[in-house]
Image (tube, rainbow, N blue to C red; front, side, top):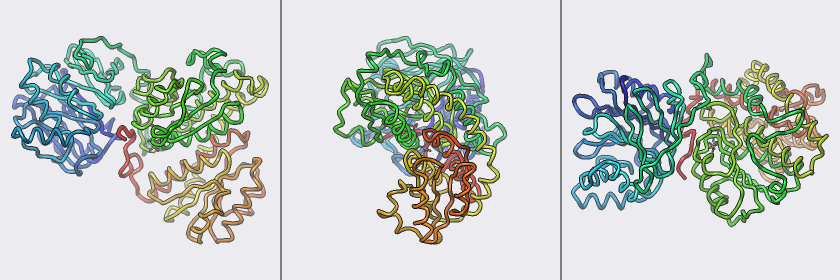
Amino acid sequence: MCGIVGYVGFRKAAEVLLDGLRRVEYRGYDSAGLAVRTEKGLEIVKEVGKVSDLEQVARGRNLTGCQGIGHTRWATHGGVTVTNAHPHADGAGRFALVHNGIIENYLDLQEELHAKGVCFFSQTDTEVIVQLLAHLRAETDDMPTALTLLQQRLNGSFALAIIDAQEPECFYCVRRGSPLVLGLGVEECFCASDVSALLPYTKNVVYLEEGDTARVCTKGVEIWNECGEEVCRDVAIVDWDVSMSEKDGYPHYMLKEINEQGAVFRSTLKGRITEGRIDLSNDLDWDASKINSWKNVHIVACGTSYYASLVAQRALEQWTDCHIVVDVASEYRYRRMKADPSTLAVFVSQSGETADTLAAQRKARSEGAHCLAITNVRGSTLAREVHDVLLLKAGPEIGVAATKTFMGQMVALYLLALFLGEARRTLSAAEAKRLAEELLHLPYKVEIVLNRQDAIKEIARKYAEKRNFLYLGRGNTYPVALEGALKLKEISYIHAEAYAAGEMKHGPIALLEPDVPVLVIVPRNSLYEKTLSNIQEAKARHSAIIAVGTDGDALLPHHVEDILWIPWTDEEFVPFLAVVPLQLFAYHAAVLRGCEIDQPRNLAKSVTVE
Ligand code: M6R
């Protein structure tokens, strides 16, 4: 949940680190810090608040060195204070260290070090690591050996970047359970929690494996595995470019990312539909006997990725004969759910680094399931651990509230559902072709909704001051209602609850009163009349009704106050269109309320701890 960067080379390290920290700031943003090796030794600067606050302080210090590490924090152990911000140093000031993750046995280690006379200054688990390292380094011949021993003493998850005042040409990295990627430039090298921090400098990267330790120098990197044996890791070429992680004239990343959804849709489809047939042969090497061996499909995810999975559940149930189970990863990992070789287990994660999703995958895999990742990040931990990967191709998503990756996830999951249906012959070739053709039209329809932003903004203006909302949907729009309510909660801090419309009478109707608007997704589909009845029930309690309705529906305006219009599409595909006005509604309501859009309070983009 924190962002790490490291640099060694010919540039002014403080500038590279601040630039990198701005790019990984979405990972955590309550405090930030950096350590640079200058002629005076290790200079550490830390500040509570955003990277921009750190920049103010760092500018006054004129840090000249070309080697350093930086960190942006999302507090776990210890409050948000300058002392608790990273980097942390050992008592003698020889080592400075930044950490992403959690050390579960830090209290035991702290007690052990206390007994040896070590004083601690912060309330963090991280300070224990650097103090322990100082002890281990004093007892060993070299740093890689000390770091191998250090790993053996630590329980939990960690990505570490460390500088040693006595080694002017390099810094060190260690990775176990939290992401860390190395960037290889010419006469300079980098490390970062994710590639977006490296994009302005290099596209050549090395994804560290579990348990790896690296020495990062200007000329390149040396890597040791968890046993301390020197190893070679492949260099990968990143196919994102730096412009993809810029705001591009938009006031917020979130708005840019919402507006990219037509393009994301096309890019996730690209090369995967040939002559009206779903063709995943470039991604998945699955033959008929393998596909037919699966009786169960488990889809496991968190947050927005879970809601995309719930949408896909309906499609998979309709187009295949498999038994479909969808669960949140934090539940699935502790349930006695049988995931044997007759199970295709699909893990949906934008980042590919969500701790619960990773743990759920390891569980399913250990039980014999065939594991597929649907992720946006090539080289992520999830992508490297599963049997197969289906990439979203959405480009980097910087806004903490997921938008374009929800769209990409639904596209990838629908491709999978159609592919399985056709391969298992539960969906006729003609029907699969018709559905694939509508998929190809959908990006244009998404863009039609995006062109209606002014109308959506005006409706958001009417309701932005409300304190509570109820969101309702039925069938495949119920998960869209969940996602719409989550977006509103996350960025505007308005309380919103989402229910299956038919459930309203079973409890939530008690919440209704004139000041509680109800947002209902009511497309012209087979459940239209049923949802209209639910609207009547809410109206009878004097709630204002905002509907997501289908263009040309002449009846709807007689029943509701405001309508967010979407074009017609097949019932199966309504979620792709219905979610867009809900994202924009949440965005504009939050802007009107003066909220921080891209970095909402208390959140971090990747939840890399349990
Ligand atoms: O990277 P992941 O898709 O695994 O992340 C899952 C959730 O943490 C994420 O979707 C979260 O709910 C977002 N804040 C939603 O906007």
